[in-house]
Length: 264
Ligand SMILES: [Ca+2]
Image (cartoon, rainbow, N blue to C red; front, side):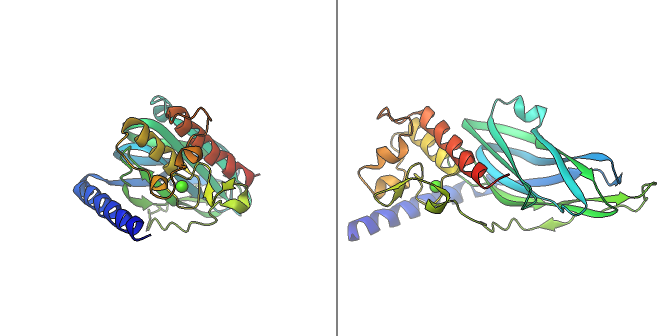
């Protein structure tokens, strides 16, 4: 027990050092970009754009006001698709959320829109779009420090008003709304969740990135390796007893399949 604690202390220390060493490189801005005005009945585009960053995996949600707008469609942008990165978009109509998740097996330098959502203006008023639950990291699991900027659009009757809208900045509060754990159907065995290799109680894109890091660097120790010698069974999603890129991809798939359960 003591031994494990010392190991985890050392691990934490090593991680802190590596994070602080890269601290100045990992800041970015994630912003909602939309027109200033639109008219009731019209469709308009809402883009979520990232400033130039090195990324490998991540997720965020876009929240809207369903009393005055409704989501029509959501699609990754052409520039994002051109990078060949795996992604998934889910919509939760009850919670007024659009989820965007992506994963890539290596670092990618990216700047521009992740996704473009089409909304329809239902009523006059001001619609705000906020980004929450942001977590984006590079392949070394360095989390980007992200300044999140929400966006607004003014919805007018017949003639669009000339009043300009201002962007408001909001903290990227990760109100980890409901972590999908056992109750959401994750398989648990021996106290561990299949796919949860960073042992934070949920299976998401961070686990996919963690597995990919291990695949490319065998000296990297995943958190689950410190907890059980049977760690491979929880990481080997394809069941071939070898940890590979396919397992990272399957964990990514599992993460959005689980998200799908709580959606529409
Ligand atoms: Ca996890």
